[in-house]
Length: 112
Image (cartoon, rainbow, N blue to C red; front, side, top):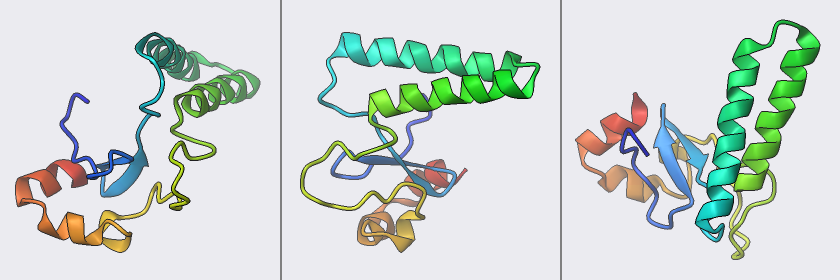
């Protein structure tokens, strides 16, 4: 991650803009993960280049498919029945104690 966002101790989420965001499935092998990342980047470019509503919808569907393939959306990739807390504020989640104990510079990286 280029910005060094804080990551939860269990590796499931990183914090950006004050929200928990699900990380990619760590069980993906590097070649598969990179292929899906490449697909995601191409789809994001297609969203930016789309000139019609239909083209934007199609490109956004490609973004969604790539994020699902990475494990960032859809069914969770962990197996302990813990709920998905994506988009929750870390201080209002099961990670509240972890967040409270973080040094302020790490919190700042996760809230900007």
